[in-house]
Structures are given as C-alpha cells and as structure tokens.
Amino acid sequence: MLVSVYRYNPETDNAPYMQDIHIEIPGGKDIMVLDLLQLLKEKDPSMTFRRSCREGVCGSDGMNMNGKNGLACITPLSQVVEKDKLVLRPLPGLPVIRDLVVDMTQFYRQYEKVKPFLINDTPAPAIERLQSPEDRAELDGLYECILCACCSTACPSFWWNPDKFIGPSGLLQAYRFLADTRDTARDQRLSELDDPFSVFRCHGIMNCVNVCPKGLNPTKAIGKIRNMLLQRAT
Amino acid sequence: MVTSITSFGRSGLYDWMMQRVTAVVLMAYTIFMIGYLLFSSDLSYAAWSSLFQGTAMRIFTLLAILSMVAHAWIGLWSVSTDYIKKTSIRFAVQSVCGLLAFIYVVWGIQILWGV
Amino acid sequence: MNKKRPVNLDIQTIKLPLPAVTSILHRVTGVALFFGAIFAMYLLGLSLESQSGFNAAADLLRDSFLAKLIAWGFVSALLYHLVAGVKHLIMDFGYCEELESGTLAAKVTLIAGVVLVLLAGVWIW
Image 1 (cartoon, rainbow over the protein chains, first blue to last red):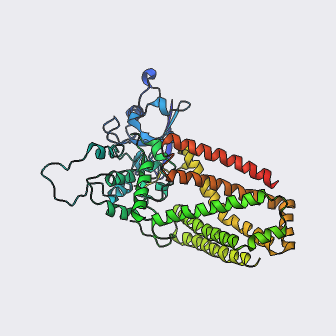
Image 2: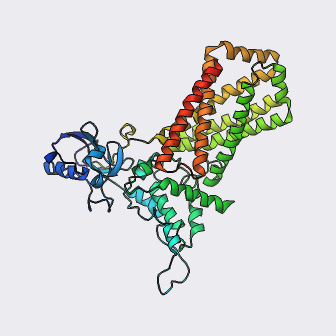
C-alpha cells in the first residue's frame, strides 16, 4: 500500500512536505495505524510521532488519517485506507513541532480557562463529598474525555479563533463541572463563558462528535451550557 | 472571558438571543411577503401601495428592516472575526457593513413613509 | 533551525461532515443576502414610488434576464438561509444533536434547499 506522510524537520526543512512511502503489510494483516507508523519508523528512524499507551487511553497519538482525526492506536487500517492509500497529517490548526507532533499549548490553554477542577467553598467533610447515583450519572459522557484534541482540531471555529473559542474539548470539560452537583462555582463559571467567542462560536457542525475516539458528544454539552446561560439570564 | 467591543451587545448570550428573535421576525416577514406575492398574481399598483400605506404593514416592514440590520450585524461580525485576521482590514470591512446597515434603515423609512 | 512552526490547515485534505456543508452555505447566503438587499430595497422603493415606478419594476422583473437572475439568486439565498436557520432553531431546542440525527437534519436542509431553489426559479420565470 501507499502511505503519504506529512514530514517536517525544523532543523533541515523550510517547509513541510508529503513523503510517499510504499510498504507491504506483513501477512496482509489488518493492523492499527500506529503499528504501521512503527513499521515506517523501523525503515526511517527520523519519522516522528507521539505515542504511549497504544490502546486509546492516553490520547497521545491523535492525528489526521485520510482527512479524519482519530487515535492511530485504535484505528485499524481497514477503517481508514481508501484505494490502498493512507494520508497521515498532523492534527489540523495547531503549530507543527516535527512531522506528526503538534504543539498543544493553545489547546491546553483553553482547557485551563474552564477551571477543570471541582470548586467547593463549603468546609470539607470528614469523608468524601457524596453524590446520589442520579447526580453522578449526569457526568457520564463527560468525564471520559482523554484530551487527545481530535475534536477541537477538527473544529473550524477553533481553527479560526484558537485563542478565543474554548473549543469542543474544553467546553465538554466546562460542562462536566457545571453539571457536577458538588461544585459551587456554577454562577462564576457561567459568567466567564458569556462572551461572543468562548461558547457561542459553536455553529453545530458536529465534526467534534464525528471524530471523537471515545464517542462523546461535545455539541450536546455546548447546547446544555447555552441553556444554563439562558436560564440564568431570564 | 474574551472581551470585544465591536460585537452587537457585548454578551454572547445577548447576541445569540437577538439573532434568534430577529430570525423569527424575518421568517414571518419572508413567508408573508412570498405568500402575498404568490397569491396575487395580477398585482396592481393600487393594491400594492395600499398594502404599504397601512400602519400595521409599515410597522411590520420597519421591524423587519431593523431585524435584518441587527441579524446581519451579528452574523457579519462573526464571519469577519473568523476570517479577517488583520485588525485594520477587519475594522474597515465592519465599518462598510455598519454603514450599509444604517443606510438600509434610513432608506427603508424613506420608502415606507414616502408612499 | 526554523523557528516559525508551520500549521497543517489545508482544508482540501480534511473531511468535514454534512452539517459543515449546510453551515458554510448558511454563511455564504447570509453575506450574499446582506448585499443583495440593495437590489430588494431598490425594487421595493421603485415599485412603491408611483404607478410608472411600479410598471418599471414589473417590466424589469418580466423582461430583464439579469434582473430575473438576481431576483432568483436573492430569493434562493433567502429561502435556503431560512431553512438552515430553522435547523439551527431546532438544534437550539436540543434536537438533532446526535451524529445520526444531525446528519439527517443536514440532509433534509440540503434537499429542502434544492427544492425551494428550483421552485423559486419556476416562480420567477
């Protein structure tokens, strides 16, 4: 098969370029994209990408595979290869450090903005702050995010305003804490989101939902944040 | 919190709400006008001008124009801040849009009360 | 050592889902409508000015190919923008926010848009 990889080495290249590599998959097996990258790295040790857990938990190897963001380690070739060809590019919209490795600073900055931790001013009880199973169930589909950045870097609104629009990932986390009954900073959290950029740049194109490797739905979470803002203001 | 001084109402929620409210007004006006034009195939000047002489129609039309201007400003502001990264050019484009929006209001009043 | 980092943002290499198509068309028609309103306001003013103005406006829409084309473009953009706007309102109420329902809503929007554009063409010609 033919693999076309985005290559960029800041020490030698002025601009990124696409490198075409022909490769035979041993035994013709349906391996994961990450395994394929490993094979490519054996041929050319300069091939650079992030990886760690290789099972879709750490969120290190998010990349754009034949046009769609996803985690290389849990994406089988059969799912993405088209006409025996695979194009691998770094996550869109973030600065490229080298080959498939992007600088996630902008992404993390937006995550930081939503204060992704429990805020509770009441005195800490001797045991854990308890929650009813129903209240806890509200956090399902929110807490599972692994911050791989596949969603935010698939979002045109994030591409145009990565410094102002929080992006699907950050907003999913914002809602994770807004929806937490143990959190006491709801009003303060909402005030910080009520500007024309942070939340309202979402126009519901749902590419975040389309690419999320964990099957989460930031679009829905954003809608719920909007409803909270609306309820607070009317 | 991102601050911006050129958005319609400063608050994201306010802009969002205004865009929805004005959208509903514009939808009602559009459906009314298209319906009116569809079901009056032999439209005469007398019928057309008497329609716009009615106070209700003048209010409806002016409301539609004001809605269009607010709706368009929120939309165009959003489009311009997405795609035009150079502040001077963006400001120039926004100024042209703002001027045209103002012209629409004055022009509309002139047409409506000139009938 | 190259200090300025490149950004991978070649839109042609990125797949976008169907709702992205309805969204960008919503934008394009919105911008077009704002400027197309010059034409609509001109026609409204002309038609309400006097009997002869009314006749001139009617003649323009009957005889001028260019005027018909602009009118078709304007009405098409208006109707598509309206339908896509209704989709937005439906999503605001929390519907069609799953991948499948959202894609279906985008499909319906596009089909309704095409039908309305054709009907508008029939109406104007």
